[in-house]
Image 1 (spheres, rainbow, N blue to C red):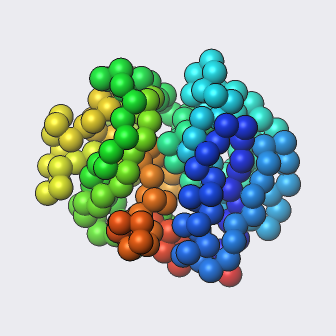
Image 2 (spheres, helix red, strand yellow; image 1 turned 180 degrees about the horizontal axis):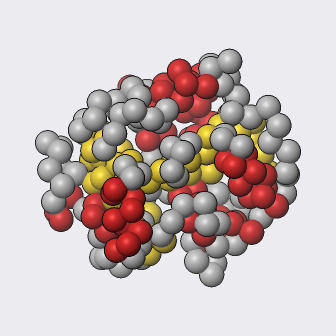
Length: 230
C-alpha cells in the first residue's frame, strides 16, 4: 500500500500518522506539502489531525482551499481511498467531500481523553478487521468535534449505512453519556457513498502498538493494508 500524508501549516499529527502507517504496512508514507498537487501512484491519502492554519475562520476552512485538495478530490473521484482524522475530518467537510459540519463541543471546552467507538459496519476496507458492533478505544483531542447535519442528511446517512462509528460506552450502548462532544446521533465518523472516504474525529493512529498503551486502532490500518496491498 502506497500512502501519502498531507502536511498543512499548523498540522501536528502527521508524524503520529506516519508512524502508524509504517508500523502496519512496513513502508514509510510519502509526506505531501499542501502546495503539491501530484498524488500519482498513491493508494491512500491521509489528512491528519492538528490545527491547520491555526484554525482561523473555521477549523479546516483554509486548508480546504489548499492546492493539494484539488488533487485529493480528484483522487477520491477516481475511487481512491481517503482518511481524514480530527482536523482532517473537518477539512473534508469544509471541502464538501463529506456532508455536515464539525461545531464547537457541546461543553465549549477542548476535550483530551479516551473514548469508545462502536463499529457500525464491518464490510468496508477501513473496518474489515473489526466486527460489526465491536467497541474499541481511541484517544480524542479536539475543541470542534460536535458533528452536525440537518435531519434529512442524518436520515440519509443512516439509511444508506454511511455512519461508520458512534461514540459508545465500553459495552456498546449508544447513550448521551458516551457522547462527549455532543455529536448528532453519537456519530463519530462517516463515509462517502462508495465507502472509500472516511472522516472521523478520534485518533486510531495513536493506538497501534503496545508501547503506545494499546493496539485498538491497529485493525483500521491493517484492513487498509489488506485491501490496498500491491
